[in-house]
Image (cartoon, rainbow, N blue to C red):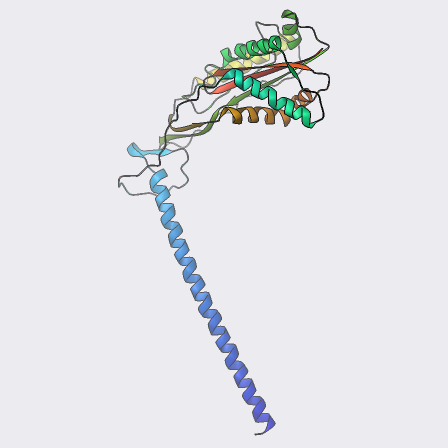
Length: 298
């Protein structure tokens, strides 16, 4: 056999090997495409199933958590096991003590001495939290989707400023501070609405933030925001809740303290080395809690 013929045969064999390799890749690609098509079909079936659950409820209603708009059949629907769990009976004193404990853990991590619980400060804090619940009855109506809770360092009955309230109670101090919080203890909630009505978007209302100003200016600003908030909620319609779950006491305590620690002003109070006595007051209004923490350095 001549060398040229031998080289030609080798070339033919190489071409055949390449073709076989390409055929194998094409076959593998076809298998991948078929597998992908099957996955797509399975996914479409899952989506259709979810749409059947969340798309339409009886009487043409839809869940707030609806994620698909595809029309579904009128066959009987198997709804998820939604339910409104009974609202927990929280022990507000235990919550206050739990918050106090977490505050001291934060101080310990920072190398600071613990805050000593003071019953007089705790009573004052509770009274201030209770005072704030009065304006929040309508603003936190549990039948509504939109809520506008208001909290304020100012008081219209106990002493306007925190220092006034301390002095009115005969509490002596070198330094003082106050942290406030309002939190909802609803963990998960779902409501349903008519198919021809889009989900409600809550109107935006100015918040009453801590700032400088005379007593007259602060009262006027608060009253304006309160009136606007009341006017807004009075125009809203009740929604039909189909599912509600609640935070545990431990979760509420952690949310409050972590929220304070993420705010520079509140964090400064918690980690102030001058403060050595404090008290926490927790009050419940509808499905919200208002928390006051008063600190003093003696």
